[in-house]
Image (tube, rainbow, N blue to C red; front, top):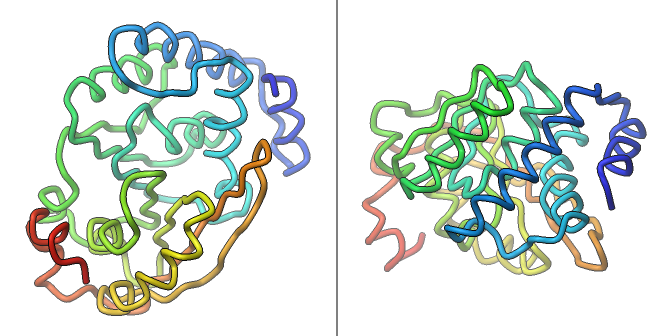
Length: 231
């Protein structure tokens, strides 16, 4: 898949990418390739694979209509999924939480080079950030960050009541859906939709949760407790 194919996929969803947006994606690929030589950002390095496995995959929740308003991307790594979403929908208000400082340097360079606005990178863990930013986001999303039972406690306390938490998973996402049912219930969410799709012969599962009540104030716990004793 190349950027022309990506543009066509967007057109199928009613989104016509401008020349500037295509150029932003092109610049993003170049920056990712350049910085990946000196730090571990991604194991996916081929041009066509970056377009499909990073860019297109990041855009699936946007295509499905869940992404709007104030978005938090937890553990974004090299900027997925939030930066591709921001390129395609410049109106998004984005906060990226990334605990590794050198990755934050890369993300800020991408934001600067692509001239993106209304997007902030915060070098902080979600369980610390939530202390002063509880339940303020319309959407909290995480892609390939942690097991769902752990991830739910890191993300759901950030979500407004009646808004959404989205966990982007590989095929094992369906198993994690079942295993994390108790954790998600305790934290105030209900499964809203399970989106399954194939990407380059690989199954992907996006778990979309709706927050039906406020998260008890005792959550999230310290990360060591979350990891040692998932809900």
